[in-house]
Image (cartoon, rainbow, N blue to C red; front, side, top):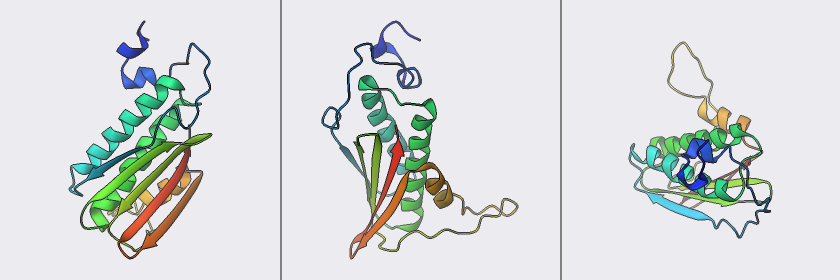
Length: 157
């Protein structure tokens, strides 16, 4: 690992421990909302926005397990990909620290809640993302309204 935490890359930063032993409060890392046009390249943009949030969070307190970092990025990628594929138009990604994890909200323009689809590895065509989100998250909820929906997921940190 680099001698300077600030010089470390994101993969090094998320594994580091705070030398000060400080307790992170939810106020220490404010929530962050990023808006996207809803085009295919926005999936990468959402993942990069999530990684930036996690880098900032990791400067105060690292994840309890390195896998938490990767799980959050994977879930954000799946949520953004679903928004691009199934909801026409823009979407917004909001991330915030909770007492024991990270709360991710993705707002899109389709009021229809996601539904699990059967997955067949021989034919491809998707169907695994929503199952994956449920497997990795502590809690998943969908709040539809007349203009779209919010998908809330809570993950450990």
